[in-house]
Image 1 (tube, rainbow, N blue to C red):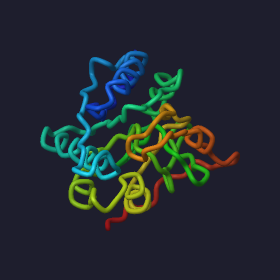
Image 2 (cartoon, one colour; image 1 turned 45 degrees about the horizontal axis):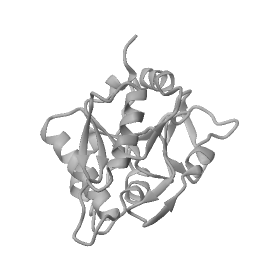
Image 3 (cartoon, rainbow, N blue to C red; image 1 turned 45 degrees about the vertical axis):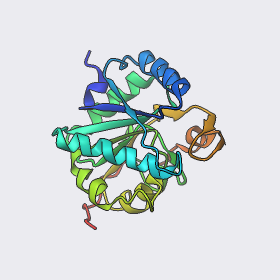
Image 4 (cartoon, rainbow, N blue to C red; image 1 turned 135 degrees about the vertical axis):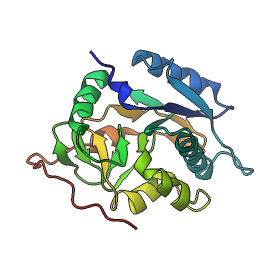
Length: 219
């Protein structure tokens, strides 16, 4: 049976040099889903003023830059607090099959949704008004947008994606979600972070119809 993670041409995990504890926890998750040997650690970029949303955005952007330079079809970016669902392999395998023939620009393995999600297929949803970037795959089609339009000093990356990318590009999410975030101290916010909204809000309308994407728009 094919490995569903073969969908991803490259996989990186962002981790601060100052947080070996989080890298250890991330490695346990990667081992659990069988991808520890495929994931490259990316030392998180730290601006002069310390860990911040700017550093997170720059880290994502530099990973995309490396993927673009290497000619990668896509790149999965994980953050070191990622937690995978017990049925990740099964759900991701189904989603991968349903991606066949679909054009997509960004694929979320999980997100914090602020509206009910709409099915595109049984295991894929359209992503709108969603936040978080703990497990996100950038397709090659979106590389130029991330490299040319994202301004890390001005934008939190998940907010930028929600406002500037999700309404205008083909953004999908695996459904049910296969990746959440581990509660703990956040170096970016400087406080304890609990991510229960990810699992509680990521749901579809009870009678959500399966509908195709509208025509792609540029911006």
